[in-house]
Length: 300
Image (cartoon, rainbow, N blue to C red; front, top):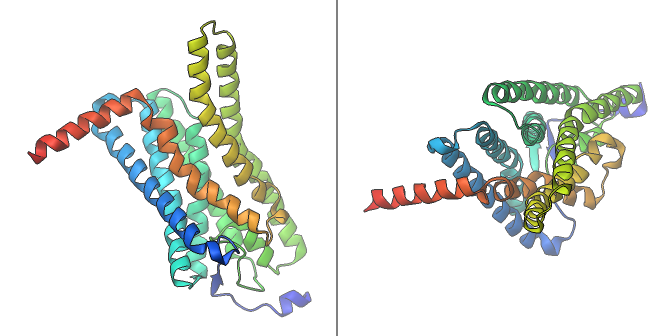
């Protein structure tokens, strides 16, 4: 046994770090995260209800968007409420079991969002792809969670504000060969599970780019650029911040920038999705107006 393994004791809980080490910014960060969480829940729940309450929106595309809204709410609800409570009470402990549950939900929900954004299909294929995606991401999340639960930990102070694989690996004092094996599995799955939908998204935008290049109308070109620009911006920022800790596990250390970057892909991106993918859509806007008129009519 190595010296670390001799000193190993059973870990019953983990202690999180703050989102930022700047103590004078804690109140501002708390307010920003709370506002982001409320925007996410209100926007995505409204879209979910609209898409299931309006027959005009019962199409494969809107079914996928309703699933994306559900996943976005699940992602932030697994992380932000607890982070907010920890910031408010300064009690940052989480039990070992709760940490593993949070890790499983985060891995499954976070990856599922990427798969949904890559799917544009017919009804029958849509249902098969959604079911297949859930199987893939749940098995991926289960494997990673089981590996994390079986590690030996020499400390319990996570340099992060939620349970994620890279900071958990930093705390492990398991044999080096075991850690190397786990990191190889994480790298392989990171490429296959996280970057596969990204490849489909890139391929779709290549096709869109070819179509846009053929446009002879300046108005049509401008509309296409405005529509795709916001999508691409969020996708690039999401993947650039979300993939590096998994593809390069050793780079996730005590650096504050890793925790700040995590705020974007766990909180900001899910809150932006309703605005980018749905609320600016004419069909959704019309459904929102119809629903608003019905609510007003019931109130009279």
